[in-house]
Every structure is written in C-alpha cells, then in structure tokens.
Image (cartoon, rainbow, N blue to C red; front, side):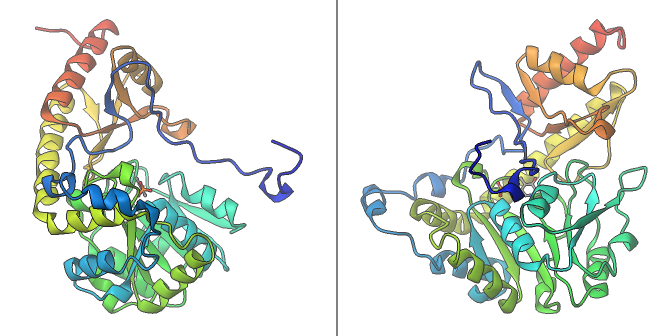
Length: 358
Ligand SMILES: *Cc1c(COP(=O)(O)O)cnc(C)c1O
C-alpha cells in the first residue's frame, strides 16, 4: 500500500477470485465456467468490420442488446441494465441502494461483504441453517438492502418463487437484489416478478450458462426507475462499460438462446451422474440447482482433497473460510472431465485408506 491511498480503503479486503494457474494444463473445475464453447452463432458473429469499428466507442445505452434481452425476458428495454460482468451490477447496487445498510445470507457469494465495505455500507449476515437451507424469514422485513443468490453459492441450493416473493413483498421500501448467476441450471427465475414489485432487482450473467465468462457481460432486470438509478451511477463512472465486441456477441447469444438452454440441460444431466457416483464414494452434498456440487467426505479434510487433486491436474475450489474447511466446490465439466475427476478422487480415497477397490 502506498502512502497515497485514501485511508478509508486501508482496511478493505479485496475479493479473491478462483485461481487461474498457467503452469500446466488443468481440468478446470474451480470457477464455474462452462465446459462448452459459446453458441456457433456467437463464434461467427464478429467480422472484419467489427474489428475496424473498434476505433469507435461502444453504444453507451447498449440499446440493441437491451431490446433483445427485453424481448427474451418479456419486458421493455427500459427494464434492462447492462454491465461489464454482473459483479459490476452488484457494485452499483451497493453504491446506490445501501443507505440503510445491507443484509445477505452467510455463507454466500464472498464478494457481497467486499462491496459493502467498499461503499461504507454497514451489513449483517443471516446464517444459513445447519443443512445449508436459506433462513427465508430472516431475510424478510430487513429494513435495508437485501441481497441473496438464488441458487446460492457455494451450496447450490435454490428456493422457490414463493420464498423470493415473500422476501420482496415484506420489504417494499428497500431493494431486494436476487443474484441469479446460476438460475439456468434448474432454478426458478424471479424475472416475471419485476412487473409487480418496484423494489426487485434480478441480476443475471453471461459468465456461466452462456459460456461467455471472458466477454464480461451481465444484466439486471427491474422496474424502470431502479434501472434509471443504476444508469445514473454507470454514466457517472464509466458510460462505455460494455465494449463493442461484447455487445455484438451478447446479442448473437440471445438469438441462439436454444443452444445455451440445451447446454444447461447437458450440464444438469452430468451433475446428476456425478452426484450419484460421489454418493457411492461416501460424499455428501446439498441438492444442487447450479453448475457445481458442494462436496464433503467424512475423514477427508477439504484442503487435502483440493491439494491432491491439484497435484493430479484437477482444479477444484477450496475456501479459506474455516467454517467451510471440510468442503470443496466442484464445477460440473464435460462427461469426460467428470470421469477423470471421479477416477482421481477414487485414487485419493484409496491412498488415504478410505476406499477399497473390490
Ligand atoms: C459468477 C458469479 C457472479 C458474477 O460473475 P460475473 O462474471 O461478474 O458476471 C455473480 N454472483 C455469483 C453468485 C456468482 O457465482
């Protein structure tokens, strides 16, 4: 830290992204990316002209993409906000709507407390129950900005629309932000509720189900006034926050929507087969509606499994939070990748005397 940094940032603890090591080829099951490439229409969307047009600024309104997303989700362009990854939206939301503080479940996405600290938003957490289910009551009537991921990360557990609606309806004078980063893997989206609740902001991303993490594209759906608030902050921060290439690719991906829906189904099928195999090996995990499993094995410390798998070329995510020491989060890859993962897990269990091949 230099002596020039504003003192208010001195205690800030930045978010730690999952590792992206380059030292060798890994089977990457640690950051919830899709194992499949983007839609063929996306791969073909950029021509020479698009590259030449890089000399021009992108459309700060992102109008064409907003219209497409609005059509897909059954709302108007004025109900859509575009951003550089959905983390960008979370940042603006804490900045915009945190005047009375914030509440979110714990454990959940570890970026929420970072944004709260960054913007000086006092926060409290609502612990998950013993079995990792959401304390829905605890998130009602909070009297401040309420943020939850549905499905939750890193557990993968989802709540239904009734629970979401209950939370939103209980807090009419505060924004409820539902982070639907993993909604396409079996959850129930709250997108349709934006027409009935002015305080609901639904946040989605191209990074997971749409196979476009590197394009950095997120969007929020909500009442036009809420969206206008986010636009105000965006235009006061970085009006061109989504680049030209990404706007074009994002629109092509909406046209090709059946492709990502199909991919999500494949990933759900692989998730079910992986879960069944892990169960046979003595692992336990919550019922995931996301593209990952949050796994634990009696007698096998989480950090040990993580390290041994890394040595064998398979990356999974281990968290520094001591409450999660027994666990690892495993992204669902292709059938082949999960086959290798399971084979290596079996070998490690054998090494540890926890499994005998018969
Ligand atoms: C991956 C993720 C995001 C957002 O990622 P972006 O790449 O910034 O869109 C948001 N929330 C949760 C819970 C996530 O797991």
